[in-house]
Amino acid sequence: MTVLVTGGAGYIGSHMVYELLDAGEPVVVLDNLSTGYRWAIPDSVPVYEGDTGDEELARAIIAKHGVDAIIHFAASIVVPDSVADPLGYYKNNTANSRTLIEAAVKGGVKHFIFSSTAAVYGNPKVVPVTEDAAPDPMSPYGSSKLMTEIILRDTAFAHPLKYAVLRYFNVAGADPQMRTGQSTPAATHLIKVAVQTALGMRRKMDVFGTDYPTPDGTCIRDYIHVSDLVRAHSDALRYLRADGYSATFNCGYGRGFSVFEVIDTVKRVSGVDFRVELADRRPGDPARIVAASDRARDILHWVPRYDDLPVIVRSALEWEQKLRARNS
Image (cartoon, rainbow, N blue to C red; front, side, top):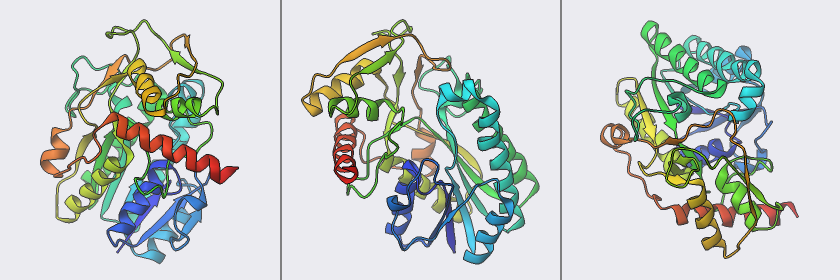
């Protein structure tokens, strides 16, 4: 049986494709290539350029390739953009996901793994935050993902579909074999922005807000290596195929780093003391969010391999250097 990866030509999706191929799984990709790249995955992988909101296309892919599982990454992901364009985010992230889920049900797909986000928690009262914490998203991005979680839950109650929701914290780094990485030039991920600044690709970088209720006044996040994240998806797929019940899992390491700590780490790893400027807060950013990931470790038997901030930064730096050489 085949795994359909939506957004499979993007950052996390392309890592997922390699993870599945390395495990001997047949893979097919659906991606509109708005932020992904065909070259990010092997030529041997069938890629359909299209939208997850195209039910006819999704059903055709499911039928043609005998898809038994969908891993759904395709989404818009920039929090401030979601504040400026909530309708666009609800269409792409929620409405299109609802259409994809319907295609899965009609096509007899048994397992659905959804790429959700820690943004559903908003600004949690207790940190590390567990999966049982009441959702309270601060942005349309977080709300759009939470709505999809609810659609999945209700659909699984009514149909023979089992799901795993994986709530990501801050994903960074690149494939250790340098086969793929974060390739979108205008990506807003902190570590990528800092690495690009260290390499002289940006004149300077901004720190958005230094008045948060944290030790150094900047936001604190739980950074997870992308390879550990996609491994959690593989673990979730094995779990569901072994008749596991539908469940939600946090994906993070349980340790947080402030923006200043991340910048200092990038400076140490790169050996470059680049320019940093202070700016106002961005809308929708919580002060501190760190994962409690005991559930994934206990139930999925997920074992992280790259829980080290300098390792994450080094892989991001190496990928950015490779990407710059490729594009030059």
